[in-house]
View 1 (tube, rainbow, N blue to C red):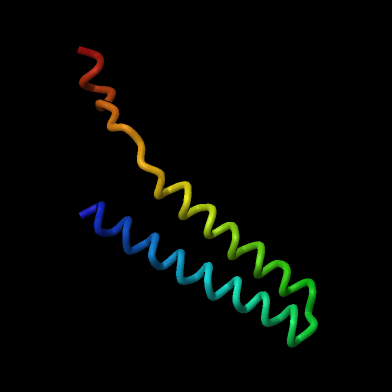
View 2 (view 1 turned 180 degrees about the horizontal axis):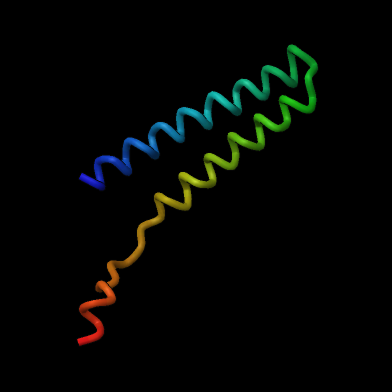
Length: 69
């Protein structure tokens, strides 16, 4: 269940990153609003970075309770 939920959350983050980045570029080019557009682009790139970090596979580590024994 957790794996399915993680995939859904990563998908939503990717969609939000695309929308933020696209909206930021639109604000920069069409609306000439540099401050808001730049902040939106940066927020979108941060979301892409978060997805990249969460998608990196890590080796399975045994739980702490098992390693005490």
